[in-house]
Each structure stands twice: as C-alpha cells, then as structure tokens.
Image 1: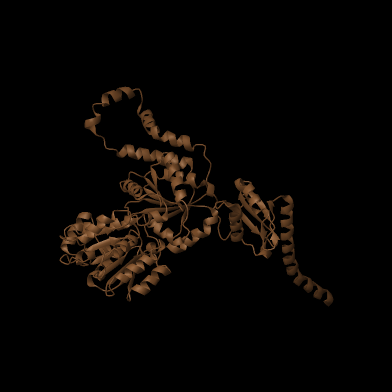
Image 2: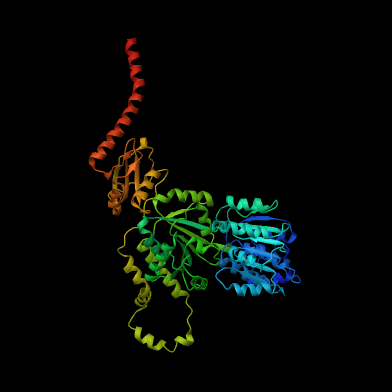
Amino acid sequence: MTKSFEEIGIEKNVLQAINEIGFEEPMPVQQEVIPLLLEGKGDIIALAQTGTGKTAAFGLPIVQMTDTKNKNTQFLILSPTRELCLQIADDLLSFAKYTPGIKIAAVFGGASIERQIKMIKKGVHIISATPGRLIDLINRKIVHLKNINTLVLDEADEMLNMGFRDELEKILIETPADKNTLLFSATMPKEVRLISNNYMKDPLEITIGKRNSGAENISHICYMTHAKDRYPALKRIVDFNPDIYGIVFCRTRRETQEVAEHLMKDGYNADSLHGDLSQPQRDSVMNKFRAKSLQLLIATDVAARGIDVDNISHIINYNLPDESDIYTHRSGRTGRAGREGTSIVIANLKEKNKIYQIEKLINKKFDFRQVPSGKDISRTQLFHIVDRIEKIEVDDSEINSFLPEILKKLEWLDREELIKKFVSVEFNRFIEYYKNLSDLNTPVSSGNAQGGSKSGNGYTRFFINLGRMDDINPAKLIGMVNDYTGVRDIEIGEIEILKTFSFFEADQEYSDEILAGFNGKMFKTRQIGVEIAGQKREQKRNRSRGKREGKKDFRKFGKNKNDNKRKVRKK
C-alpha cells in the first residue's frame, strides 16, 4: 500500500514546498529510502533507474535534517556533470522554500571559482558538487569535509565511467569515518561494487525494479536498415513522430556534429552537444533544449550524462553504445516520473547479437518495425495537421476584423476544396519529398543465421581461400573486412564458412575497397586470396558440399549393405 509523504516522515514545511511543486505521493524509491535516511539507518546502496525520483529520495530528508544553526557543511552530494549538479542544487532549493536559513551551494567546473569560493566562505549547509572542482577547492583549503554527516554519490556508475575514480577516493578519504554514505546507481558494475566494499559499512542494498533493467513504461523499438542508410532512416523516424522531443545519441563528437548539421540544413529544429563545445555553448544549447526551443538534441554519451530534462518523449540510438549497460542510461532519460517513453534503435544486421544482449539486460524484447515508408509518413503528418487545426484556439478579437476580407477571398471555394487547400499547405511537401524514395528496410533473420542472402540486391558475393581448417568464423571474417578496408560500417550479408574456403556477401559499393584491402595480406603463413565469386567457385562449393553429403549417405547406407550381405549368405 502506498503511503503519503507525511506518513513516511516528511515535515510540514517541506510538505508545503513539494505540494506547490506538484508532488502527490511518493515514488517507490522515495518510499524505500526516505524513512531509512530520516531514521539514520546507516549506509545505503539504492539501485534505481534515471528518472525514478532519486533526487527527492535523498533531497527531502537532507533538507529536513539540516541544522541551520550549525554553519558547517553537513551534507555533500557528488554527481558526474555540471548539468546534474546544478539540477540537484535547484531541486533542493525548491524543497527548502519554507525552511528559513538553509544555504545550498553548487560547485562545478566551467564557472567562476572565485564566486564559488566567496559563497562557501559565507557558510553553506549543503554542497552539490562535481568531483573535479571539489578536489580543487579542497586543495585550496576552501572546502572542509570533516564535519559532514551524510555523503551522497549520485549516478555512481556514470562517475566511474567518466574516469572519476581517483577523485572519488581522494574525496572519500577527506570525509569522517562515522558519516552515512548513500550510493545511487542505475547499474552495479565491478567498479561501483569495489567503491562500496572499500568505503561503506555493511550497506543496506535496495533495488527498485529488476537490477540493471530498464523502466517498465519505456517501449523499445528497433529499425533494421543498412549502415549507409542510417541518416535517411533517422529523418523518416523523426517525420513519423511529429511531436517528438528527444535526444539522438551518436558514438563520436565528429558524428554528433555532422548529424546535427545535416538535420539543421534539412530544416529540422536540432543542435549538437559534445565535448568540443565551450561551456557557454553547452549552456546555450541546454537552455534551448530545456525551453523546448529545440526539438532534437544530438549528443554523445559523455556530454549527455547528467542531463535531467522532463517530458523527453523519445531516445534515438543513431548508433548502439559500445557497452550494453550504457543503453540503460540512454533509455532512462525518457519515461520519467511514471510517463510513457520510447527508446529507438537504428541498427544493421551485424548488430543483431548486440540487440539480443541488450534484451537480456533490460529483460524486455525489442519491437522490430519497418522503417516508415513515404506513404506512412505522409498519412501521419496529414492527420497531425488535422489535429492541430481541430485543437487550435481562435482569437476572435484579433481575427474578426480580417474575416470579411478572408471570406470574400475564399467564397468561390466549396467546403471540401477549402479543407483540402488548408491541409495541403503542409502536406504537399511530404508527398513531394517521399513519393519516389526507396525502401530502407533490411530483413531480420531468425535463429543463429549470419545475415540473409542479398546477392543481386545491392550486394556482391566474394570468395575467400580461408575456411574452418584455418579457424575462421563469421566474427573473424567481419573483423578482417573492417580492419583491411579501414571502413567500419560495411554491410555484410550471408556468410558461408566451408572446410577450406568461404563465401561472404558485402555492400557492392565497397567491392573495390574489399578487393584492394585483402590484396597481399597474410593469414598466419598463408597469403589470403579474395575475389568476386563466379560460377566456377560456386561449382567448387557444390562439389565440396556434395562430398560431405555423399560421405554421410555412404555411412548411412553401409549398415544396410552389410545387412543385405548377411541375407544373401542365408540364402
């Protein structure tokens, strides 16, 4: 049974503040953590996804427990990024609206350290900090942590992923041994477990939902397409979701910038967020995104860590992350506070195994869908326009003076013609753009098949003089194609590994690169031979297969032959 905030121990002054914010009843992580913190139950590890109400879970009791008569710093909250650090400080200030005298400081890099020093010297009860800037202030003997009674490590796994382990250990050494430590993490990798073992005392572990799993209210959708078609597929997905407000994740800074520039050039309301941007540029982009002046934020994982923005409708994985755990962090930025969210993956056949790994991690199946066709998109956009027309509020006081002239101008049109023309103002551009575009979908193979046969459909079939006897398997063969050509996104079709040679299919656009890349290369002591497969090679393949099948048939027939001989002797 769900208890109220009052029933789990929140006092009137804090209740008044959160009622104004719109908090109605505690979320699961808040119900579990708040009473334990208020009762001083010791160290706690809370495993919960991003957007499940973690800030209030530690923030409400911290505000309530602050002794405003004591000028020392009593609470320290560490988080991985400037954005999350600021968000936590802002939330705590909101919770403390009716708690007079409480002082909260945000300490982070990329801002004036002098201003932060001045604020801390006046005395602060709660510090929300990023590790790097906090270490700087500790070294300058500005921040003193010997009197803190509670340390919160928020997004601990992300802090360690970002390389803050040394900084965390230095900070932990500065804190008193008898403090309470609260560690929040979406996942529990070995590095986080090591921190907890070394610096926490018999922590109580709380898991909200299945460990490492995604939020229940997030739908996971996968669109399979060729690697070279990622960008047009992205555009179709965005056009198919007219009200999208989301983050598009890319692997590299360069790709992030390129995708953002292409989208802006094509008329989309988008911008990029990556490590090459200055802090003022980052702030400008994030302010526009929070204000919904941007519809799409194109970001790297590092740049997006700690982004705390409500109402994100979609996460789009333009590329899958290298580590499956990171997918959980990405998708957790939508579907917050009980809202519905959608996490989309644009993948190719080579990435199928990674998709299956993610399914096991989040304990959910992807919904494999067709990349929307031009007709699908045009229909969706048409009814989106109709919905907007239907729901728009008319300002009679402003438009009435123009109405007689408008009616006169349009009086020659009947009702149906008028509706068609109004709708077509936007609809025509989608019809024109999408009417002759090709299908971007690739078939999704089942079982353990290494792709599907696509020869003659944009793919070239190659022969290679390596097979099972050379310890070759599909993964090694794909790796060789990547390494020898220097191209990481060549689409690979069917792979057939035989005893002494093999066949593989690849995007025909890269035929020259593949032939040139393998030319002169050695595998162990053998020179590799790769050529475009022809009729003679296919005949050789069939003979090899025929011999194997013949041996199987002979072994099977041999038993019958002996039986026949025995029957003859009896006669």
